[in-house]
Image 1 (cartoon, rainbow, N blue to C red):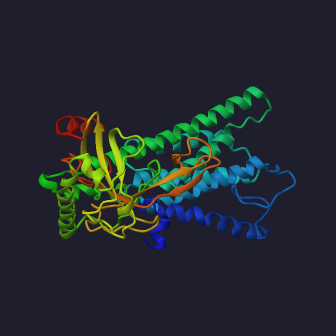
Image 2: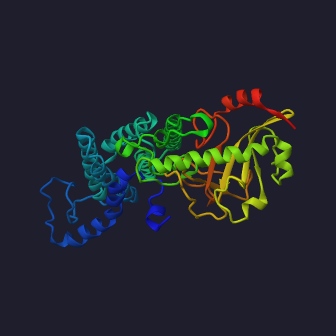
Image 3: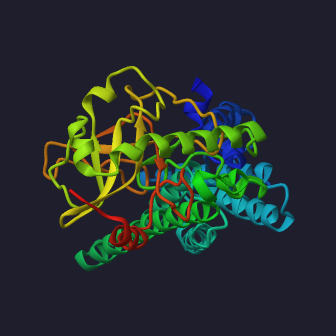
Length: 417
């Protein structure tokens, strides 16, 4: 993975212009400030609207005004940059331009110490609701630009709710409302991510003996930037290998079919759990359930990559005295290395962002906003790829299996051990 790919992980291609616009905002502000000596003291746009030099009667902006100006300015830059990635929808373009212009106007008012809360509050709520509706409906997957912008707008909304007059009840109410808004947006981002990935998995079709409908595996590739070809770092810590090469070729489809078939054939010897244990695969501390992972330390350090004969991890359903081999997990040795993708977008690798902390429970997944809690360190594990050897309705390369389906399959095919 080159530097550009690493930087754009989790960013929808259509949102890159918005990211560039936000990055250029500080430069634009510095240029405007440098040129203010040549701007008349009275703005032709009206009091507090233009970038003017300060007059004696102009109010002095507070810290809240300055924070609000930057947050609203970032929102303005993003919204004004989004139309360059959404040229297919005139209505959406007008909406972005309108909201971006409104945010810019409010940012200027806040920068000059003018009133801004009354108009900013409804605008922030409206744009947040619109974003959550679009992502929650599955029309667009939450990406890093959208999530970061939502967080900026939530922060600006928190400043709007900050009481002007002091009072314990007012401060308590504002704090509760801000926390509630943050939790609502975060939960909606998670739900939107899961829905998008569920839609992708449902597009995967499996044929007999591991045959793959590779075109369906990609999912939404013909739907402009709303496809899931970009990575999915937003999905509760999951980092998908980016793919921008379009639909899989005939050779890539055949390569994916060969890999699935070779893995299925090689794993026949591990149909019984005791055979896997004899070969060096180790049970975890929790050795029951519909998703039990058995690691092989020797295979993890043998230097082989994507070898059906020596997978790093086996996945079993284990319940009572019976076990069912579900598939394998190929895992790279080092974090940051890119795995081979013989099947193109069909054989995509993924990693996990986890949070490590000395405070119990010790580790967990990142928040919906892609960060770790306080006193925790964000770490990305090596990339991995699932290949299922059972007749999974979602195909051999799906990211996961439906637990209900696994339980029913295990009840029919479980082997004693």
